[in-house]
Amino acid sequence: MSRTYHVWTIGCQMNEADSRHLSSQLEALGYTPGQAVDEADLVVLNTCVVRQQAEDKALNQLHRLRRTKEARPDITIALMGCMVGMKEAPRLKKRFPFVDVFMPPSETEPLLEYLSDQDLYDKSRSFDMREKALREAIQDEEFSLPTALRGQSVTANVPVVLGCSHACTFCVIPYRRGAERSKPPEDVLREIRRLTDQGVREVTLLGQIIDRYGTDFDDETDLAGLLRRVAAVPGLERVRFLTSHPNWMTDRLIDTVADTEKICPHIEIPVQAGNDEVLTAMRRGYTVDEYRRVVDRIRARMPDAAIHSDIIVGFCGETEAQFMDTYRLASEMRWEKIHIAKYSVRPKTIAARSLPDDVPADEKERRRKILDDLQTEILEEKNRALLDSDVDVLVENRHKGKWRGRTPHNKLVFFEDDRDLTGQRVTVRIRETRPYSLFGSVVRNHDGLPQAAALASLAR
View: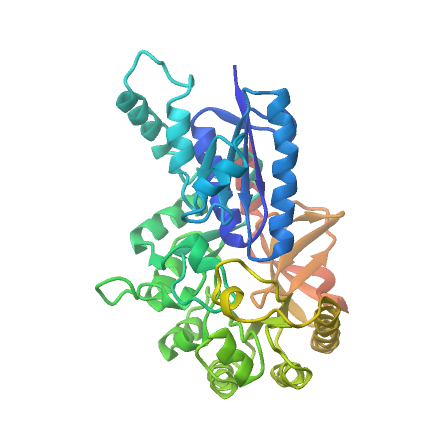
C-alpha cells in the first residue's frame, strides 16, 4: 500500500530548496504526496526562527500535530530546519516527545535513516543492507523534481553556501545553520544540469553570504567562476544569486554579472541600517559610506542594475534620528526593492545577550510603515517610466487567470494569452504599471513554444 507524505514549509528560499530535495528523496522511496496534513503517513515541518512570527506558526503546527499523533499513533512526524538547528534536538525532544525525527537545516539523513529501519524494507535483512537499499533507491532520483513540481517548475533555488560564520549581532543563522561551508562546484553543476533536464530554465544560487562562496576551499574557486560555469549549462536561460554582503562584492564578481548575458543584473545587497552607530551595534563590518561606494561600483558598471536591500527597523537602541538616517539613505539609494523587518529578539544571539530591545512595538511598526510608504512611492515612479516599453519576460505560471513571469531585473509582469506559455521567454509591452507589478501584452515569443510541450510531457 502506498504511503503518503506532506512537507509543510515556512521561511527562506533555502528552506524551499531543502523541502524540494527531501520530497524527491521520499518519492524515490515510494512515498506519494498528500494534500491533507492530518491524513498523511509522514509529516515534515520545515521551520524558520529568523523572526518570532515564523517560529509561532511552526509551534502552532506542532500543537495541531500533537492531537493528530494521539489519534493516529502510527503517523511519523519529523521536525526540520532552523528550529532544530545544530544543537537543539535534545531540548526539543523533551518538549515535543511525539515528534519522531529531528533534522538540522539541509540535512535529511536523520529521517532517511529512521525510514530505513521501518517496515518499508524487509526486516529479514540487516540494517546495513536496508541502508544500502535506501541509498540505491534515492541515488538516481536525488535531484528529480517532486511530483507536485514536475512539468511546472520553471525556476528553482539551489543552495551553494550552507551556514554562516559572520555572526551579526541580530542574526540567529550561525547558531541554527552552523558554520559557513561551500558546496563543491561539480555537485552544484550536477544538480543544475538535472534540473534543466526537467524543464527548469532559471536557477537562483543561494547562500547567507553568497559572495563568500569558495573562500573555505584551498583553491581559487569563487562565486564569479561558479556563475560563469552555471551560465554555460545547456538549456538554462537565467541565473540569479543571493544574498550578497557589501564586504565581499568584488570587481571580478561585478564584471562577471555585467559581461555574462544569462546572469541577471539583479543584486540583493542588504544595508540593514543607514546609520554608522547602528551598523556597529549590528556588527555588520562596514560604514554607510563604504556601502555607498559598493553600490556606486555596481551602478558604474551596470547603470540599470536592479539593486535590492534589507533593512531592520527598531534595532536595539535605534533613535529617531538614527532611523531618519536610514530613511534618507533609502531616498538616496532608490533601491528596486527593500525587504523591511521589525527587529525581534532571537535567543542566543549577541544582541539577545547584551543589548536591550528598547524600541516599543508600535514605534517599530510606525518606522516600518514610513519606509514602506517611501518604497511604494519610489517604485511607482520607477515602474511608470516603463509604460509602453517592451520587456523580456520568462513565463513561470498562471495566476488568477493571467500569465505571470519576471524580467531579468526581477520585475513581476502579468499578461493574458490563450497559448500555453509555461517556461517561454516572451517580449511583453507594458500597458499598465503598479508599484509592485506590471501588466501588458505579448508582442513577440522568443522560443517558438517548444518548452511548453516539453514541460507538459514531464508532467505526464
